[in-house]
Every structure is written in C-alpha cells, then in structure tokens.
Length: 194
Image (cartoon, rainbow, N blue to C red):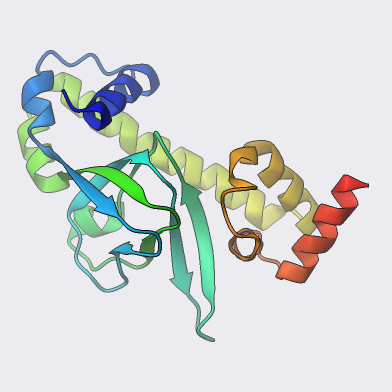
C-alpha cells in the first residue's frame, strides 16, 4: 500500500474512529495529486466535486475582497481532510481559492462517487457525517475566535493553536488570517518576546 494512503487510513482510524471492513474498495476512490508551491487546487468560480487528505504540505483557503486584497480564511496541513463542501453538496461554483503554500501531496477523491458508494454502507456514512461535522465545528470555533477577540488575543490564540505554522507560513499570510497588518503582527511578535 502507498505510504500516503497508509497515512490517511491511520488518520481515519484514529481521528474518526473509522472501522471500515472494505478498506480496499474504499481506497479505489482515491488518487494522488502533487501541487507545487503557489499552485491552486481550486479557484473561485470553478466547479469542484473533490475532497482531499493532505499527506504532505500546507494549503490555505483565501478570498479576494472588493479592494482586491487576499484574505486568508484558514491554513491546513498534514493529516487534514478538506474540500469545498458547499460546492460539491449543491453543485455551486467554489466561493474561494485553495492554494499550496508548500509543495503538497494530496490524496483526492470525488465526493459524489464516494457518497453514492457509501449510501448503503453504515460505516462509510458514519465517517462522512463525522467528517462534515468536524469541519463545521472546527470552522465555527475558529471563526468565533477571530471575530470576537482583539488583535492581541487573536495572535496569542494563533500561537497556542497553531505553533507549527509560525515558522512555516509567511508572516503576511498570518497577518491576513488574523485581520491585521503585517506591521501590527510584527509589533505583537516583538511584544511577546519581551
């Protein structure tokens, strides 16, 4: 079995308590995809029916605001499942960009095909429901923290929740995610080191 598929299966077993009896058939839905640093997996306006597991690398989700500024919504690294749920759930074009911040190895599957296969298989449906719920809960927690905290609180929260990103993601991306300027972030970083 491929190393990347093996990593994904271990994560599914541990994080989602997935105990699938048909792993081999399950794995038939997945394929590997490589992304170069800076390459987009999906862009605004594109239809996307796929979701993916990040085996290696970091991706970001971002929007472009009315002034043309990129606004980071989130960063996702190894061991995460991700996909434009609103796009593949209702057939609407994707509303945001997903871009590699590092070279990435993704394990990709088509959601409608996976869902059709899982429809009458309780263990796969449990995984699917748990996956959707975990995305919703983690996004809701993250968004609440970003919306209800001041700049310093957001920065401390980011350092606590995502310390592994501090050296891997450019500071201007982190500043955008925290809704502050790079200068403000630099001041907070200096203050935290004092």
